[in-house]
Image (cartoon, helix red, strand yellow):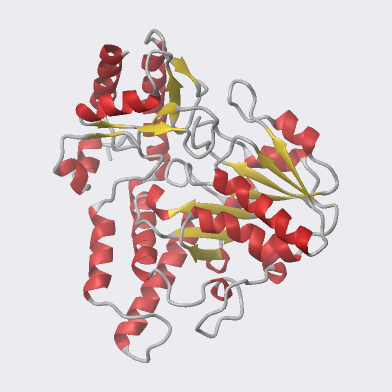
Length: 386
């Protein structure tokens, strides 16, 4: 870090094996991020002296149990929560499914409503339709309502308010959209909906991009994956506000004496190395300074948006103030063709519908370790291709 709080990009890049050992340009960070030495070392240290946790009356088991609980504390601190509100899952997909399974399934009644976005990631929508079917088999009829983003892909607060009624028990929101990068102000949503309506917030794209404080956001549930915040794959987090813990009913059963949240939602042997990687990643974000990361990303996204805007025949789908991925398409080539052309130049971007939109796009998602030079390489190649 410089004295002005600016990130020294080359110093950061030296902490990642990918950038030390490759000249490839990686711009698919919305899908998964690269891993710093700090995370790899923490995982290697555990795997080289492994044990189970919470089961052995010996020092190594105690030490690894302490590492897991330390990771829980690190994540809690990262998002302004209590460590008892942090549940480890296999990833955001499981976290979002668990909201429907461990809270909604035993708390919703006939006529209750759930509000989801038709344009959000499938993992934020499909669990609710699955739940509706399960409840119907029990004779309980719930309604799933859908809202849309505005035509400029900005959050549609008016649409959310219009769709919400006294029967709306929960609204599913995405903090930063995984296709368009638009930011939803969850606290603003909370201010325009009934007090008793809960919010489930998908924070996958924001967890390593900007400061997260669940109290400030007023989120009741918050989900994210480790692999999008420099940690391992197969690990994620579900935050459940402690005011809801008495209404939670675990669905899975397994070993261990676990009778309260979070432990009753983590039966069996956990992904111990994944959890340890989460703690190391959270510490890395803290040491790097998440506000500096946010500032760096803001700069890169503005450059990216303005340069893409100047390329003839490109249609930008993200808003100009995108805080995450920037997506575009062109009638000249398919998104897959662009992706393959860029791959030949060692530039990696995402193509397809990104599990949310109904159209094929090219998605470019920088992170704070990307450079202005890499963005120029992308732009120059796009100009040649298109």
